[in-house]
Image 1: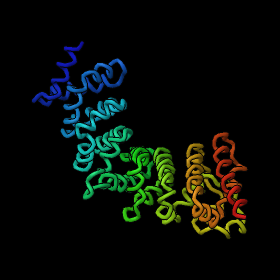
Image 2 (image 1 turned 135 degrees about the vertical axis):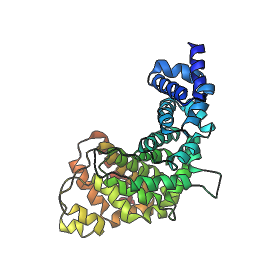
Image 3 (image 1 turned 180 degrees about the vertical axis):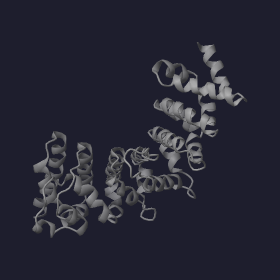
Image 4 (image 1 turned 90 degrees about the vertical axis):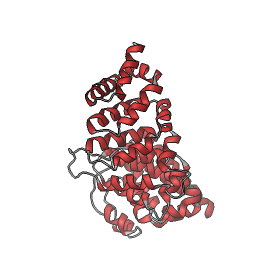
Length: 332
């Protein structure tokens, strides 16, 4: 099969469009199973370069090439090889130079895979080039925020930017760029917590949590978007009850208004857990605890805990509760 596969891969660089189309369709099919992925990975040196080149081609070639690369790049070793070939800038260049929504969606999925490894995250962030650092992710966040479809059945071209955000926020350089006040990227992304798309919501929630790991040296930047941050973190864990006027009077309007009437609960326990973990990281700082108290955060957490049923989420409530209580006692 080795010789046959190498012959097939050679056809990816054929001059005939029909031959290339037939070859890339077969390769895409092979990547759909472990039996096909193994031999292709073993010949990555002759498989990946022509596939990476084809995403610059006509949509009928680019789409199946992108699908093949998505499947191959689930292997971190393959992702590293693709990053070394310059696939991150290539994918972004193609993404913003054509108008095919299906191909756009595939390219964003490919970027989500490639940014799971540090070198891919750094390539997307353009670390090392001060003049353009953060340009790619700024464009992606803008597209992410502008493209959320109103119809839940419609294809969401940029939904996988949520996964890209989670990935880049796992590296310090990514958190720094997301938290830069002038760029306002985290502030823009937070609005997607209102999306009906669960991938968008969970991705943004995870990104906020990751950014809160910078609370020890970026607390001011986090609190500079408090108007958006507190509702994003506290509403998912506020429980189901309508709050009293007395409780609401101690909250800013953006929280009080939301908690003064019945609302849709956040059903995903992972989002509730991520919110609590973010609040914990903020509360490790004295100024963060004061800020939480200033919006009546402890009362919200107490009410939310009473309604919680998921054991892991309850543990997260208890962790931040013990932190807040112990520090109050220490200060007294």
